[in-house]
Structure formats: structure tokens, C-alpha cells
Image 1 (cartoon, helix red, strand yellow):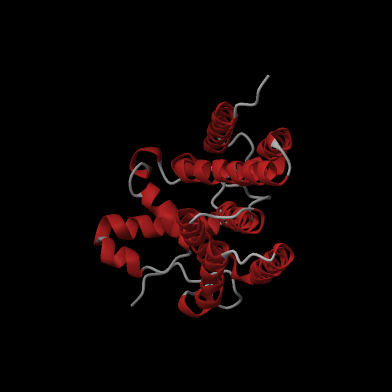
Image 2 (cartoon, rainbow, N blue to C red):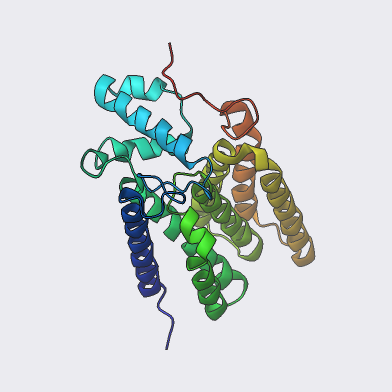
Length: 263
């Protein structure tokens, strides 16, 4: 049968929603009290999940009680701030648990699968891309972690999106519109990754540096200057140089924000 990425993506989404619902019920009824708490947070495999959930819950309370300005001044990691928006809305009905966080977690999960598929198709072929995405989709540890309140799924999505952009810069000759779009996407992915996972910044530096070398080699070999590709990678490089000085990473030692309001 001809692979249908959208159909399989919908199936993966249904699996993720079902698993999240199952985890919520197991936690809510305390069927496995040593594995999940009453919010569905993993106690043994998502060590930081409970503290991030608490931060998101407190941030949502600030938003509901004191308004947007106080919520914005309330220092929490970026991913917890995003979860707090869900807690402040659908969380009023569902509670501050994995079920309320599922819309974001589902987006991160499907984003990762999409990037794996796109990378596989660009580098190899459609069949290899489908196989790689299918393996990632049902990998047990990844599935479990993707239902939790941790920052890793969003960080992985950003890194894979960046790698896809860098792959296109090296392999294709971009149009002006494509170069602008991929440059913006790459810059946004770099910035978000710094905020979420600044302690793994060397990965980004290496990937961008390698891309510049490979692009330079391609232009030398073909004796053709790829202006649009060069502009796209320069935009990404600029974001890599600027992000550490403009934004604070919550993953670096000593800068993890407290779960208390600012004075």
C-alpha cells in the first residue's frame, strides 16, 4: 500500500491521546501509586515533572487571580508557562493534570514525528521515512515521556526542526521565499532550544558549523554561489550568536527560576 503520512499521523495522535487518558485514569484512581501520582505525573521516569507541574499550576493561579501582567512577571520555565495557559482554561474543567496538558503534548509529539518523517524523506526515501517515524511513534519510553510535563519533547521538536532546515540548506537550492521561511523557522528553533536546553548548546553550535562547512564545500565544488542558501544559514547563525545574550536559559546551572512570584 502507498504510505499515507497524514493517515498514520492521525493514528499516532489517537494512540497518544488514548495513552494519556489511560495514564490519567491510572493516576486518578491510584491503581499504580508508586508509578503515577493523582495528576498522572510519573514518579520514577519523569523526575522533574512534578515540580514543573506545580510551577504551571501556580502560574495558572496567578493568571486567573491577578491577571496577565502578574502572570507574565511570575518566573517559571517557558514550557511550564505554556502549560499554565492550558491549566487556566481547560484545566478549570479537567484539573491541573496530564489530561489538561495533552493538547500541547500532542502537538510536540506529532511535531517530532513529522520532523523525523521529513528528515528521513529528504535524506533517504519515503519508505525509510515512514519506518523511522513509526518506530519513534511507538517507542515505549518516548511515548511515556511525551505525556509528561517535562521540557524535553518541546526541545527535541526544536532541534529536529533545526536539523531539517539545515539539511535543506545543504541539499537544495532555495528560492527567495523558501530561504526567508526556513531562515525564520531555523532562528526560532535555535532561540527556543537555547531557552529550553542551554546546557546542550554545543549540539546546536556543531550542527550549524558543520552546515556552513558543507554548504561552502558544495559551492566550491559546483563553482556556484548560492545566495539564498547563504542568507538562510546566516539568519540561523545570527540567532545562534544572539540568543545566549538576549534570553535566559532555564537549563543552565544556577538559573532555574523559583516557583514564587516576583516582588
